[in-house]
Length: 265
Ligand SMILES: NC(=O)c1ccc[n+]([C@@H]2O[C@H](COP(=O)([O-])OP(=O)(O)OC[C@H]3O[C@@H](n4cnc5c(N)ncnc54)[C@H](O)[C@@H]3O)[C@@H](O)[C@H]2O)c1
Image: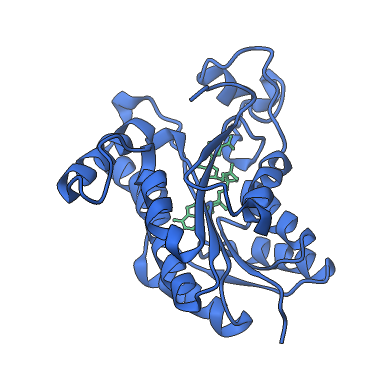
């Protein structure tokens, strides 16, 4: 039986998720890549690249905002590779629209993917890791687009739960700090990466060629500094690889920006 650790990467068909999947394979991890139905061809290509690195891999299509999909993803992973050690809740969407044009449908879709999707990924990974009793690594994407609203939603949730279990000051998005504390007795760490201006298909705009290539329109729209150059997804993957390492057991409840200094918090 293989003793390699097993990871799931959601949103793994392209961009940052793909880079993380390949980077974890370099570290000897077997990787299940997942994405929405329709991305099978890209997923199969990622699987092939991981197998070429000598690791086991398979893809599972799943919509992260659907509970049954995430449960199925974890179950299929355990069935195929015998367990789950690392969950990378990377799937996310963004909305290139002025706020005044945003519809409730846009809003709901963004929250379903970026907020509920991460929560479900955390939950089903944690349940499986606790059952196994050998610890684990849970790593999530901090989706800036939902930042302000999700922060208040999380605060409301925390106050409703009461202060016996949670501190009054919460970390944004899913109280990473508190989840980390809740899972610490199980030797599961929980951390987030917060990318900014990473050159992936997410930043693509039809007018990019007119303004200097991939990400140029996004950069102008977000009023980013002229001297900021976008980074490759592998830059994020390197940080995520660190979070997954056994020796990173003492790093938990953290959110690390990977954005060339766009934000300091
Ligand atoms: N690129 C950046 O600069 C940047 C900045 C901030 C946050 N992010 C976040 O980083 C993560 C990766 O982004 P990326 O830049 O690689 O973008 P990307 O669009 O290239 O990749 C995201 C992947 O997530 C998948 N996905 C979307 N909705 C899904 C769902 N409901 N279920 C399962 N999979 C779903 C997409 O199909 C896609 O393959 C996302 O969560 C994104 O919000 C990226």
